[in-house]
Amino acid sequence: MSESLDRRCDVPVSIGVMAMAYVACLLAGAMALGRTGATVAGRELSTVDALYHAADAITLTGLSTGDPARFTSMGLTVIVILTAAGMLIGLAITALAVVRIADMGYSDRRVLGACLGYSAVIVAAGSAGMVDPNASGVHALPAALAAFSRSGIAAGAAPSEWAPRTHLVLMPLAVLGGLGIPVLMQLVDRLRGRLSRLCPHSRRVIGLTAGLYLVGLIGLLATLGPTSPTSPAPGAGGWTRTLASASVGAINSTVGLPIQDLNRLATAPLWIMAMLMLVGAAPAANGGGIGPTTLACLAGARPGALRRGDAGAALGYALVWIGLLGAVVGAAFITMLALNPAVGADRILFNTLSAATHAGLDLDMGATNAPSHAVLAATLLITRVIPWMLIWSMATKGDGDHALP
Image (cartoon, rainbow, N blue to C red; front, side, top):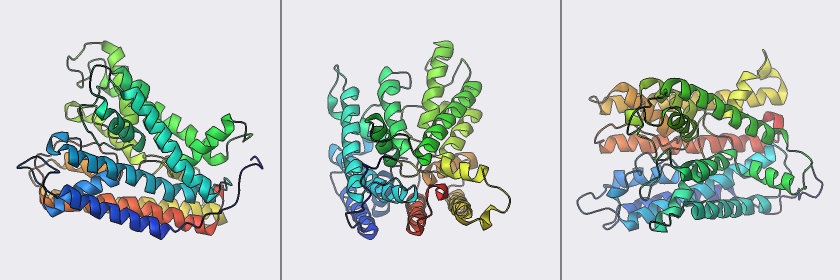
């Protein structure tokens, strides 16, 4: 690693302050969404529903905010602000931990600057690419923010899964958002000649991201077929459209942009997408799920690894996270089944997984009640906070890159 990198942690950072800011934004957003004027007349939100929608936005999920018809321009503005706040606070908390664990040598000041600066530049560039010369550009910024933050928010009609802007702008933004700020920092330093090579964590994240995309692409190609039910005219476009749908699905499974009608998909591609969203994104990235590096840690474990120092610590953290995630999903699924007896168990399981992994994809469950929203809000928040606690527990131990699952 280049010696020119600033290795000092010269800005005292209180993760507690960031966490309190996160909670404050959540509560302020819920209050704003519950006010008259945030939703159209006759579709006002109860206190529980307002908290759910605020949690949905700030956790970068977007399960239900894909229906912009419910919110006025004021409500959509609140949702966009919550999304931006959730993205920046989440990136800061996790990036500061990852650069410590992976021993990347970046100062706190530089990491915080990158979280803000990289996000602003990437979203601004994406917004320029999303401007439609034949329509109002008011939705360009929310669309770019949704893609980079990997949130299913929507503030207008999204492009189709076959539109050039989807493949040339939204999907690349989503990939960048899934790599994480520390990896993006290293890529920029490598391109500028400030690094001779990427650290093991960055190489691992890039390789796993590419590998998961290829696995998802092949799986969806095999199950969608040339007459994809997502096409408005099945059979039209043949394999060209199927390839486009599979490519978008392989990325969007962990993003949740409202560009595909999942309710028209067959069972096989749906559950391939469910497995992809369960894997999720890398540490210090916009996303959720188990994490590809966590699965790689499990796959590379050897018998007795739990007793082998740092490697055993990494495996222990991986097992704890998977166990806690499974417990939350199981509890939420059973509760949602009891609250929605008329809805199919497969739909409830898919939506529960989507909430717990912050993927944002959802199948139609009809009108859900306030207790269901309370369960989903709790699921969203718990599965967002637990990884932060685990990753900072690792960071304070200073175990090094090989201990980052």
